[in-house]
Length: 122
Image (cartoon, rainbow, N blue to C red):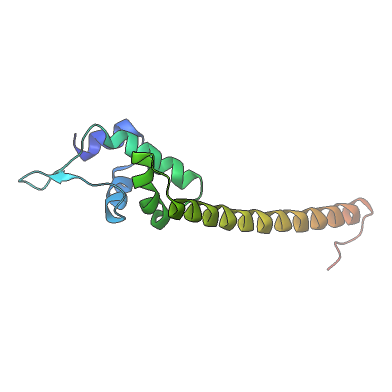
């Protein structure tokens, strides 16, 4: 199938597919006129790529994971990679929780001041 059809079937933009190729996440064959052509299996691959991006994984990690996703083979290196990504995400979650807690404090302080008819403390 051509790039426009893959984009429509996978629910992504043509630009996203070109980016995936640049990142070595997706490959196409080229016609003599230079048009990209993909196998039907590319739809599933794009869906997996989208899921991994949605999970917060960067393309450099996704490119390392895709062979294992396709074969089902679990290596010690894969487990180390996955654990490192989990730790990175945990750190981001911790930062977000601290930011949310700080915002909660600001909201409470501002609301208390407003209810008392006072300006918000600096």
